[in-house]
Image 1 (tube, rainbow, N blue to C red):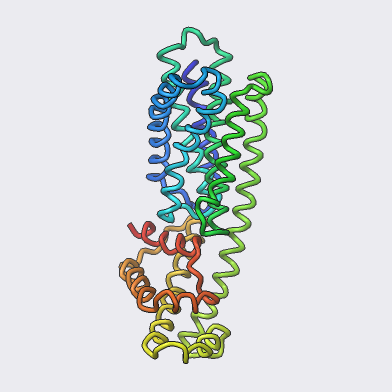
Image 2 (cartoon, rainbow, N blue to C red):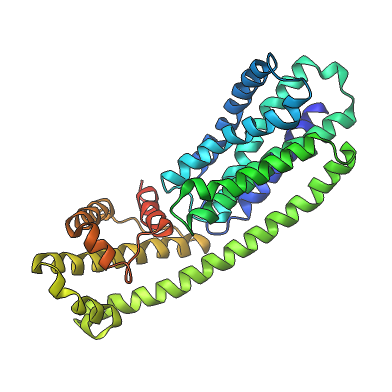
Length: 332
């Protein structure tokens, strides 16, 4: 029974979150990587906490030092995935974050089970499985959600990461302080965390739907105008004409090509999302990789000044970079 209460609650919660991902943003390989990273963090934290025990007071470590170290280490892979544009929205951020915390808690519970299980009664294992384990997943999930929200608004990744890290530390430290008795803390986590995730997923789904509908319709309309040779009559075309005297003719040509290719790839990425949401298999095109390389080459040719001039039409913010990057993995 110890195994049931120690392992299954957090795994079932992770499966519940995974099934809520209607857009299929989460990749199973990345999810497994996050689980494994969480387990690795357990060993690293065990070593660091024991090292700190030589210099810090015993009570200080679980209340303050351990929450900081554990949340920072768990969050490292979130920072990596976001730097590689492998997380796009709060939905996949929340699931990857919870997977890290789940991996951490599973290894931690295995350690306790084989080393000090004789000191624990069944209530302790229930608290560890439903309380501590889900707390670990929830804290890392909040870091990921607030971080992806932050990088969508600012390019300063340090500034974007601070709210999540601070909130996770406060929640983790507060849990270790036992501000309420352990069974009550566990009950609060079991009741309120699913509600919080449901709200996050609902908000993120609405935002994703709006992003798809507004941008997709606009991009398809402009793409049709380009194919008909009527691009100049669009607002984008008129804007490009207004800046043509400020750049060399070959750069203007590259800008036209860049806009056309970007729109094609952007529409393809959004189409894949909509196909996956509705349970259809995506259409694999053999030339996607070469088109992505061509887009990158055109981006280099127009230069930073040219890209800045095109910012009113195409701004390579985090979400747009993630969108293009998703095409690489859709076609692997």
